[in-house]
Length: 284
Length: 169
Image (cartoon, rainbow over the protein chains, first blue to last red):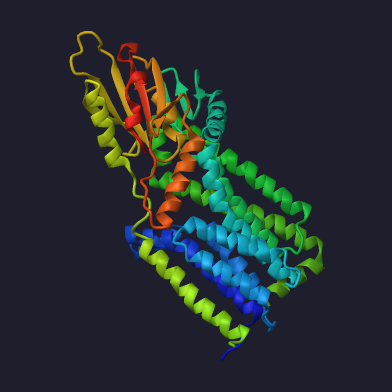
């Protein structure tokens, strides 16, 4: 029988965890849109989540045979047992707990522990954002509404925010719903930034942190601009909220987040040739 | 006694395939909303209060938030309207309720599990929702909770005195 070893077991459990957590949205997306269209929309899972999962799995896939211990088996068995619960949210929580246990496992090499940290952050994002959007829905959406009203104020008279409504002299101009909130988009952007930066850099440099801060600010500004444009008129709403407007802003976000993330990583790596060599060695 | 390697492979094969099969089988059985039965419960409750539904209208693009509009069956003494809006996602539509109409809404409140509150009961809704999900997971299906937003355009309707305790979910 083939020897699986500790590295093989960790990789297999992480892969199964990721599959269990994403299977339901993938199936729902394929059933709703068909294979082709669903594939074009990343199978109903945000591309940032796919990127983070792939980077985490690549990092966990370490070479070399390390014999299994009883602790490895117990940890993997507990995680696998947890994954049998038919709930995507519970699967994310199980993956997060397993990944956090790996982060604090000093027997693993630094690359594996970094990958485990990326996996933990990816897995915790979904339940945490879901809880935040349920429990803090009103203040979070009101924050977007206040910013959008402030952005419109110099151009339109009498525009103000009340809760998550943008109001004008002639009544409600826009209702900001959960899917339009800055926080939901921000969580994906920062996940992508963290996964890429942490994978390519052995330690996070000031430039990389700065890139994260710039991404956060730019994303909120972009989202507020989109909301403000939607509130200008019925025509503005139709254009921005329609398929072409949505695609434009999604592409803008994609290029912006990717560009700023790589800029932060490139600058930091250029400063330290040793770090660049270490990063390259991870994918050798 | 099997080696650790054999045990690991057995665990992966057995629990791994079981977990994926469980997700595949459950993929069609998630999140049954209690919307339809609750809408009917609410309608029955309001009919019992001598109100009749005159129309419904969407509050936003799409069908996510639809307002049911009621008035008294014999409106000689009270011409006010009562608005009822079920909310099964979160508080995102709660601010729409106070601006549901012209003439202006004079009173609005939220009902969850028969209890009235001034604000959207975010914590209790989340707890009930999480508990319903967990109960589904362990094979004891429970309907997902729904918060009913209620607004009136005239105090004569005495909406707060109605028997909301009949809306149990």
